[in-house]
Image 1 (cartoon, helix red, strand yellow):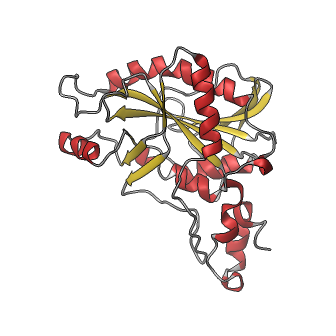
Image 2 (tube, rainbow, N blue to C red):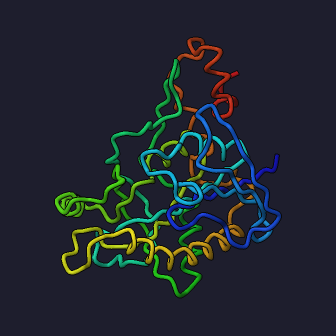
Image 3 (cartoon, one colour):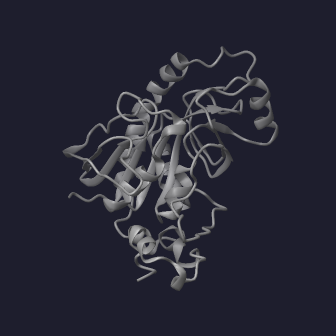
Length: 291
């Protein structure tokens, strides 16, 4: 089976990875079912990369129904260590215009119908999540975006993740603004939480498609508006991905982030009390810590 240290999860509008050579489609079954689609593995700028469309090709899966545990597990099983998420978002700030890009540094969880952890059935894991995005990978994405020259990219910001699939009410949109949120989307969680549990360096390229519904002078948010603006951003996201592929280190040992070893101090359950079948089930994630 081919291996790739870099993974990309494509959101709305990004269903394939342009410029990928030596392509192979991999169907993976996980303990949590099948991922959103087959994983495409190939070379981008000479670097091995795995690509997975979050909603499936043809946009078949709603935000609440995304098999996030299966997606992250499948990518981890292919050797992915660096995971880049591309997501469509609404802007909650005047200065973040539709078609701008944001590399967020914080998350706020407003989901309510999603499983937020891999671990269950006899093992408890409490991972630190104060800084939900990998600072190393976020910096590389920001640097790559700025090098394009013709793309407006914003450094940092808080992404509030709502349940969906309906868009916000005006009351919700104004409330999120009053709370200090910057962008709003439907897919960063539990994706970021599960990536942390899988010890992946995870960061997001957020593509602003609209002003949500708080901006009274703007037209109402519609699927057509979102997809029109997103299509303009997809090409830029592809350019960033090709650029960052050349920058990502082959070895994470020099990283200043704690992503690669976060589970070392996060497993709370007495090792002798963890059932053998649970150890076996989670060997991909915890095997290096628990024999």
